Amino acid sequence: MRRVHRTLLERLSYIAIYSCKECHAEDNLPRAHQLHRGKAARCPRCGTFRITRLKEPDRIDPMYTGVLNMLERAAGGKLYHCRFCRIQFWDRRRLQAEVLADEAAERETETEGEHETEAATPQTDRPDVG
Image (cartoon, rainbow, N blue to C red; front, side, top):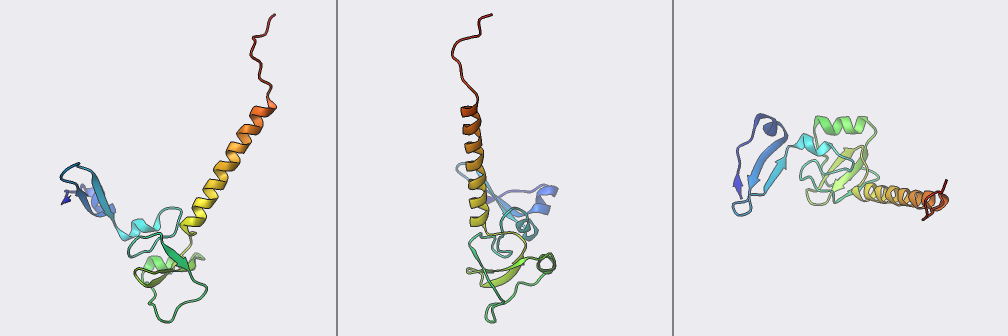
């Protein structure tokens, strides 16, 4: 992997962009504010989705400090813990497993609704003769 020059807009969104020497595929390293976007909660330090929800603050692991963390707490966020970074942080979004389960349930109800409408409309193979 080698580092690629970034445009001005890319500098605002990514810390670095890397390109593979063999296949020329690009990979980027997002900035911390990019981790606060999306449907599921992520660790603000490493960006992993593999986090757990806490009921109360842990006295051993440190709390992640920052303006965005304070805003998440003020917005009614829940307390999460990253097992890799060993930090606690606040986030208003749900866990990725919950988001994926809801999306799968929505897709399932949509396909059931399509099958019901197909069964309700009669299908005829012959054209109307007038």
